[in-house]
Figure 1 (cartoon, one colour):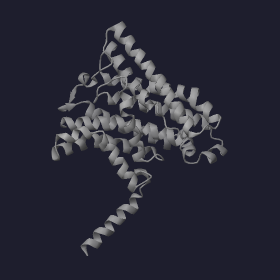
Figure 2 (tube, rainbow, N blue to C red):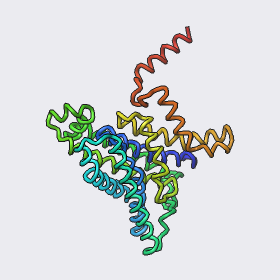
Figure 3 (tube, helix red, strand yellow):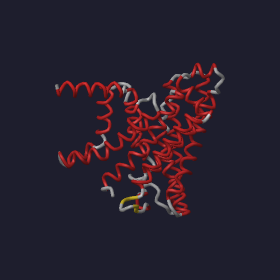
Figure 4 (cartoon, rainbow, N blue to C red):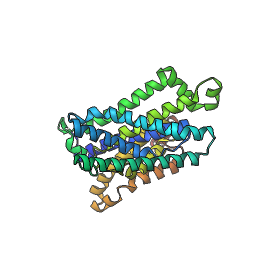
Length: 313
């Protein structure tokens, strides 16, 4: 159904869309760039790997557990670090550095966990190819079909939560105008906590999905954190849907775009694979500083129509 390069690109893009969406959600609610997203994503992979190693079955059935564990990590980060700093009116730099410290703690725990799994259960958790445990569906890898559906489902549920539930509407009000929302009696602390629950869950779920298209290691999250932020920035840091779209575009650009260039230019271009999504982000922001979400699409489409009419005449 899909060639290998496109199948891997869909899985990778779905993973980045989830992680980038989590970064954007946390930023627009708490003004915090969560660098702990890296190790949260890695933990999501290891939760799936551990349960599959000991219980077997279908690896996709353990993805919800990865989401829940990521939510727990988000709660710990907010209650232990973010909330006390917010009460002290800490600067955005202080909040950002606190999440970096939390990330280093999580990374140390991951390393100890890998040692424990290696010495106690004789597993090999430092280099795991989760795609080897996948199965075929319609002539292609199941991940290339299931993971985009997961990303779409998460986006749909998040949209319904923010627009159809009372707490979700309160949460959206706090995002759009925190001062007015606080004056209206909305509990900002609960909004921040829920943001960390959802954001941490999306990070871990994205990491579990990502391990289906790249080698899972203790530093897997560290290697892709720049592209998580690239997706969030490309989509626009003021819109969670833009962050999810930006993550998907960055993921496809890195996988599919470099394959296309390798065919047209030559295989030497593969060494610049990691630079391609960052280049796309830079060019987009030069043209549209607020990212994709800041583009006035109706005005842009109208301008294109006018230009076409002028060219014809």
